[in-house]
Each structure stands twice: as C-alpha cells, then as structure tokens.
Length: 111
Length: 116
Image 1 (cartoon, chains in turn yellow, red):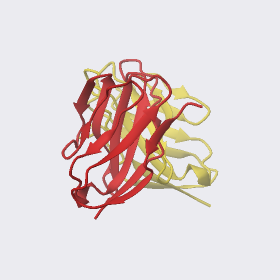
Image 2: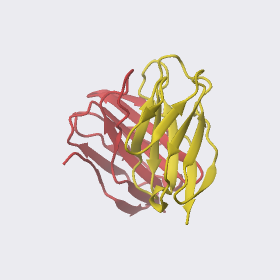
Image 3: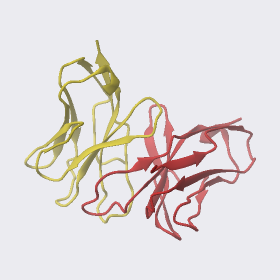
Image 4: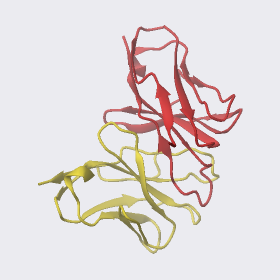
C-alpha cells in the first residue's frame, strides 16, 4: 500500500496558487519525496523532488516540513493546463524499486 | 529523441488468448517497470526490473509475466487474459531508483487493453 496519503480532489482558481498537500508520516531519514502529475490519460510526468530543504524549479515549488512528515507542492500561478492528477511518492526503504503512486489528488483549475 | 515505446497502443482481445505488450526504451536505463491504471484505483505497479535478468513483483502481479533479456526491452505477457485485466497499461524506465535518484521516471504513452 502507498505510504503517502493525499486528498482525493481539490479545486483552484486560474491564476491563483495551487497548494497540494501530501502526508508521508513513515518516511525514513534518507528517503526523498517525489511529485508527478498525469494529464488526462497520458503517462505521468516528473515535477520535482526533495529530501529536507525546500526546492523550486520552473514547474513548481516543494515545501517539506521540518519533521519531514508532510510536504506541499505549490503551483504558483495555476493555469487551466495544470488540471491533472498529482502524485506524491517516496521510495520504499531498501531501494527495492517498488514505486507506489497511489491514487493522487485530482486538481481542477477553474476559470 | 529519448522515449519509451509501447505496442500496441490499443487492443481488444478475448478471454484466454495470450498476448504480449512490448515496451522498449532508448535511454540505456537499467530500471523498467509496468503499471496498470484503473478508475478510482490510481497507478498500481505490476512488475519491475532493476536490470537485465532481474525482475520482481510489484503490488498486482497476478496474471502477468515479464522478462528482461535485453536492457532496452521489457515485455508484459498475459498468458490467459481475463476481463479483470481490462485496463490502461504504462511502461516506464529510469536510472536505478536508489538513494539520491533524480526522480525522472520516463513513461510510455500507454496501452489500452480490453479483454472480452
């Protein structure tokens, strides 16, 4: 089962920031958190990842709490094209190659 | 162009007729994996392979087989398909997802399979 939990769905107004939370309460000290998104029925696309510090790239920002038990993906100015399912995942301990996506959060950006 | 190619993209078949969904990547990735996606259930991992001749079960391996004889190919085999295997299938590849992994998992375009 997925080690991360996310809300099933969220709405966001176009142009506003979208903040997508993820709980990963059982994460280990050396496990990264990775975020992906899936638009319609295309293959998921990597967005960003982080370990402890906040991260930012051209697509999004990632805020990780100090205790590392949760994180928030931020899309600073959501557009209609950001409507997608967003997945937060972590690697299972032991680097076994099991990458569990779970159900993700369906983000609906509205005009 | 770096890509993961799946074939067929669409297939309608009947119960019990063996089929293979091929997956090929041109990025020299060690790691490859298969997922299925069903409404309300998200992406579920079927099998994965950390390198040639090394495969392991994901969360939903029942009814599927895989092989990894070459680095670039990772076919998914349904020996005796059943209607509950009707789904959207994705193949993915990357460098090994070990500590410090960049996270860039490259996905194919998906194969929509219907078993009647």
